[in-house]
Length: 280
Image (tube, rainbow, N blue to C red; front, side, top):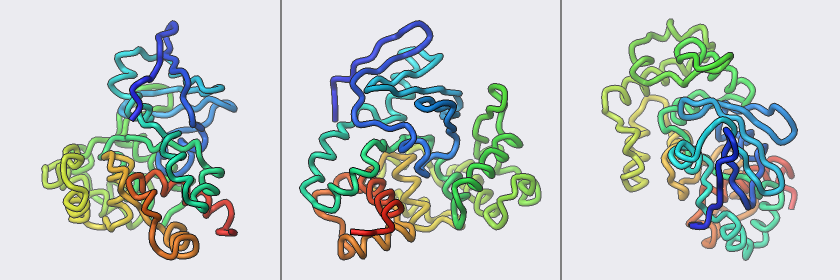
């Protein structure tokens, strides 16, 4: 982990210096989060942890608009995983020929540390779905059941709120068969049967087991929640692309050098597989 993060308050903004590697598009539009949109070539805006954030990246400097250093340290520093030494991780995994090529396609990705409940609900919605439709369902969910915090911006609805609803109540968000999964998740989290905000304290196998007690949550949704919402970077979600990539590129087993960072490496492999169609 890095300990030399350099940042300062500049007016209403916080600027973080020497952030390498980092790519906003690769990080915010790669399918790990669904509430960000591009507002210009190097600027994105979205909602996370109940706050609206606009962010820009240019030549190693990351600018967070309309915030302060206290909020940066409390929320955004961890959200963007800025204390992790991604350059060192990349250098380590480059001892593998295939991973060296994979990093060339998406080496600017950082694994976000999102709200665990929002992550779980989002990846329940993601099942048998595409990114455009996922974003639409989540936007409608927030509009109908979240709180407005700005023009066109809403918080993600709390599990306690959704737990009181019926499948019929969710019909305006057009989530189809996933409604019953969302409600079961909300009820189990609201009632404390799944203590989602303390899963990070458990061994990964136990945490995965707790999540899979939710109706409709299988290994992939559980591992996405663990990786993107609970900080388990050893979690390794597998969709059809990853399963195929593992078979074609690695004979079914992740190289040992990558296993401590399996979740981060998964992102490199996923984008390499999608872009190249697994051409070697």
